[in-house]
Length: 346
Ligand code: 13P
Image 1 (cartoon, rainbow, N blue to C red):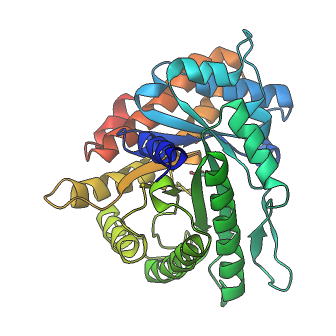
Image 2 (image 1 turned 90 degrees about the horizontal axis):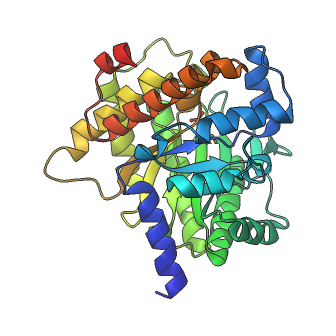
């Protein structure tokens, strides 16, 4: 391996093998505005900046979080006191990453399905982000279950784009986070989610191989294998842990640096409990998993804090406590030390 490849592997390991997790704060402006609107928070650039500043200046965040995923607007911003967000992060030792896809758009000829755009001109954008200081990137593909979906055409198009993106990232020195998200919406059972997850990951790793992506220098960001939100049967945390890990063991090569789950609409407590069950049932015993398991949550870390802040900086300290609490719960879950009793003294 050459020096750049070794450095990429170091970065990937530093992000996932530190016993910490990732915090996704890379909502596009429209997604961030939607979340603000739900809570009646003003949807302006300045308010988005204030929210993101609150997150990255949370005291002790770096004890639990190894990297944060930023959005194009955020990576260029400055905090109220002056230092850029990137300098604030550099001072805490948190590695900055950047969302580089341009969103999931309706896929032609595939009603109800989406394909993620953003490959045109991507090399130049990645080079610019690396120059700014980003050391990893994220690209999210979206797969829907239901009514005969997903189609093979949707899976292949998204897998191909993810692999092309990942190869470009490694070329410029960024560790790619490869995120094929299978949406939780629907009435399907956990078995169906497992079947689709296996099918999608199989296609993704096939494309990653074809595009010559160095698996040791990438992070997979899948969803947990879960029943649809509208499915009457909701499995326990232990059952989710078993189904998820057994599925991943069948399709994720051992060389992959780490698996960092998205939260996908689970509550903070659900996400922590399920992550904890995976650590207890698989990593706490004799034969550890081939890859590191960790988290890369957005909503399951941010949501309670956002509701407390509510656009008003007089609530800032309380919101930061709530954010830190969720980060700490997930950090504890990685060790199998999360307990619902922790929720009482947040
Ligand atoms: P959630 O944890 O809210 O699913 O977000 C993770 C993410 O980065 C989505 O792209």
